Length: 127
Image: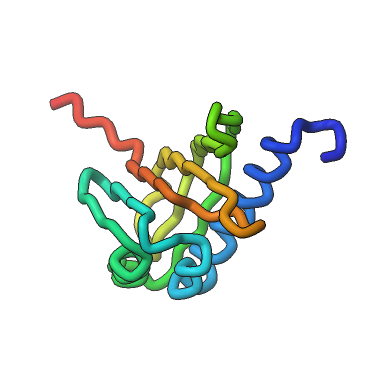
């Protein structure tokens, strides 16, 4: 990891931490958001740490497992990091589904937090 730019190291570490929390105990995700954070989940908007954790904790799945296919990270001009993730998830007994997720990470008081989070299942409706 030492040969990667710092923003890639931070972004990759964040992604690993996020999906570990998501897959094992979604109620712990509050630690990575702040009160000004925004989440767009399948087109639904949520603002604030409490609303985001409530949404993620109340998803109608008991067991979930994410598999990351690819991730990309870029520094922004205002010293943030934007991260894009493509992967697959397995929820309960449902078929495996693709997903896309994007995060904007900001360093606040020496801790990287997620200020913006956008998630979509990669479902295609050609009908």
